[in-house]
Amino acid sequence: MRKVIDYVKENKKIFIVVLLIVVLIGAVYIIDKSKNRTSHTSSTNTMSATEVKLSGILSCIEGVGNTQVMVTESKDEILGVVIVCEGADNIMTRNNILNAVSTALGVSKKIIAIYSLTV
Image (cartoon, rainbow, N blue to C red; front, top):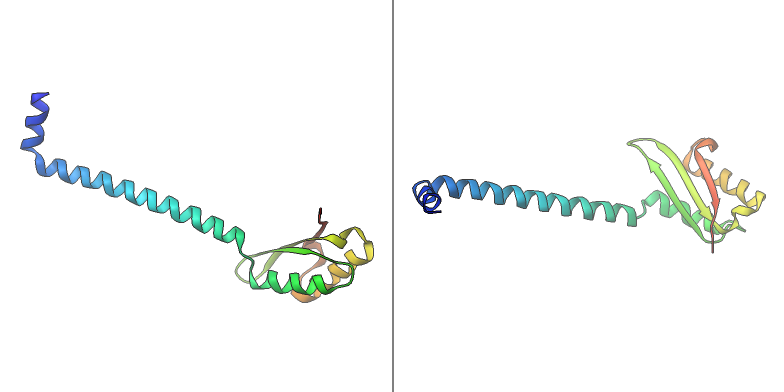
């Protein structure tokens, strides 16, 4: 034990530098982990402007009712649209939703999925 204490006293500067590096690495890891956690939760809880507008339009269509919308986008293109609403069980309402979304977003009907909302 005495040898360790003497070694630390002789190499105090090296010991302090190594200790600071370890502390900095730990701090960076903790900060990075908290950033990832907050960015993930904020992105899952917010709706894009497109989703808000589309949800508002769809809920005004007769028979649609309560609506939730998710639009998956890349930089300049819409990859898919998911609509969950109360009126999706009715084939006419479903068709109206499909036409409205396709027209509003200028996308193919193939990338639009419509599901019933469980109450």
